[in-house]
Structures are given as C-alpha cells and as structure tokens.
Amino acid sequence: MLKTVTINATVFSYYLICPRKAWLHHQGIRMEQESEDVALGRLLDETTYSRSEKHLDLYATAPDGTPLTGRIDRAVLRDGVLHETKKGRSCQAAHLSQVRFYLWLLKLNGVTGAGGVPFKGQIDYPALRRSEPVTLGPQQEEELALQLRHLTQLLEEPHPPARLTKREFCRKCAFEELCYG
Image 1: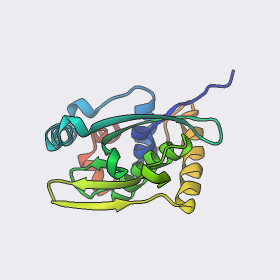
Image 2: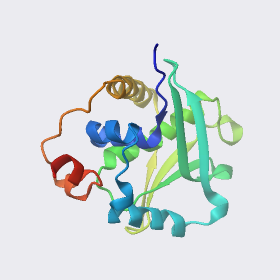
Image 3: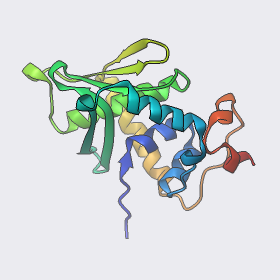
Image 4: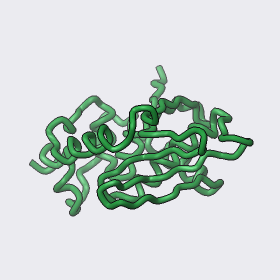
C-alpha cells in the first residue's frame, strides 16, 4: 500500500535546515518543548502582533498530488501580504523558502490579492526591527517542487538520515542532544 505523506511548512523548513530533524519531527519526535529558543520564538509570535491579523491556515495539493499544509503567522489580506515572524536571521534561506512555500499554497489554490495580483510575503524580525520582502517566481516554484520531491522520498524512508557534521547552529537546535548526546 502506498503511503500518502502530507507535508507541512514546519517539516519543509526543517528539511532545508537539516534532513534528519525533518525526518524525526515527521515521525512524531518533538524536542521543541525543551528548547528555550523555541519558547522565545513562540513568545515573540504571540506578543508581537494583534490577534486580528494572526494565523491563516492553508491547504493545497502539489502538482505531484502531495497534500500540503501551512500556518501563516500573520496575513494582512487587504494589502496582499503574508508575514512570517522570526527571531533572527540564522537559517535565513530556510525562512525565505518557508514563506515561498506559503505563497505557493495560495497560488496552487488560485488565490490572489485584490485585482488578481499575487500575494507577496514578508519576513519580520521584530527584535532586529527589520523586515525582508519575499516573492515567488517560476524559478522558486520549480525549486519548491524539487525540494518537495526529495523531502517526500526522505520521509518515506524507514530510518532517519545520518547525522550531519556538527554545525554551529546545531548548538541551538532542539534536537541537538538527541543527535549528538
């Protein structure tokens, strides 16, 4: 029997940072409750913006049939902008891809902003008092589809991928102790 894997934005983002972390999280292994950095990020998300602008749940089907889900931190629909709040710029490439993943979900559903204009994204760094605009073009859509194929294959494996050579950001990862002891 072929297993259908649903990909959510968290697992997608984890995959871009560390395939092992994505696999472990997808298997239901959650280490985030032990992480001070994750707790700080959640507090930042909960206290930075008003409730009226918070969280938009998205569901779509990728061109290859893979079910996709995501939860946007904040959407200002009248402006056609999706906002993702991040504590800092470490793993910035994954942050950009995560927002593009959300934009892709909207596009796959045929949802546009006012006047048929595609939504734009923005990564907000409140602690840094900076924001970064994010757009989705054809090249990024191709990259997302390729990354999705690789991630789906990884998640169907019976065992986690090998540990990565320890990187600087592993020290702050909620899975660091599980991977490196």
